[in-house]
Length: 105
Image 1 (tube, rainbow, N blue to C red):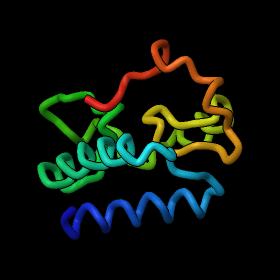
Image 2: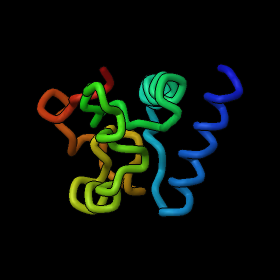
Image 3: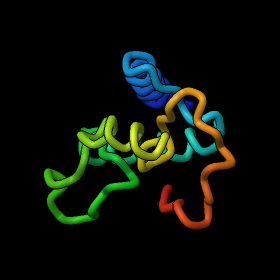
């Protein structure tokens, strides 16, 4: 992992702590999402959410992580759209992964 990746991981960990959330305990998943986010950062200079990215010629329309709907998603679903941030105590077995997963890529 390069320094920029580590800096971004520390950034999302700080966001999680500040909001009282936890990161997805599946480290592989976190790595995948953050790697895609870092690709966006290198290309566009912003931490564009890879799961809500619109892939338009104008990245100004894309959502920056943390997205504005993060808190609502965690309250309603127990996790954010990317499955990066989770509400503490969320029960993994409540998620039917085949019905809900849309990210990464």
